[in-house]
Image (cartoon, rainbow, N blue to C red; front, top):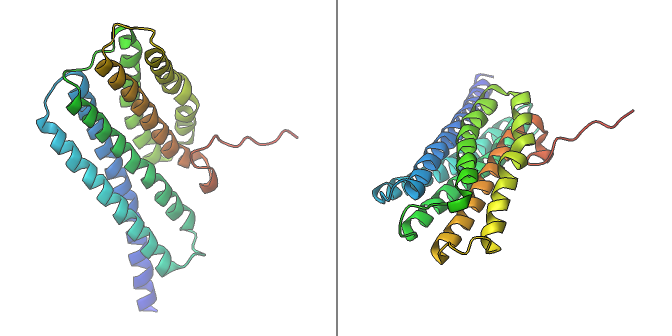
Length: 229
């Protein structure tokens, strides 16, 4: 009996550790994003680029650790445990968290190849609003996940397209469509890719938030509304 109790205690501890590591990885993503945006848009400090790549490697390590701990937990407790839904959610959202890190690294790569800080020209106001909104969404997503704030998660999901997605699309379509021929080829390519990366980061944050609202099969999708009687 004692041996079984030890197994259960250990597996529960592993699941707790996996949740904590997911929060830690998301916080690293937030720091990566802030630094990546600063390097591309405000400074040409390439020395910090290597630090961001190291952060990305740490997020990747967290992803492997979370998967390992969830697998161990399920192996010890069995698939019939009440913790299974939480375990499956963890495996799902850690993928989104890792992808956010990849896109932050992509932004750093843009900064490395772009000759100077990026100016968005006529799209500066829109792009600045997107950057500001995304910085706030990182903090809000962490809090929503930590406190299981269903209404907060719903708000993040509902406003994804209007506050970020459609704005990023407008920038990309304008640049690719040649609406502003004053852009150099380097500026146009960098701006279009940057706007797309911002949209993808926000989409992955939305997926993480959706785990608070939706059951496992619908993570990343709209909340299913009840049918009218």
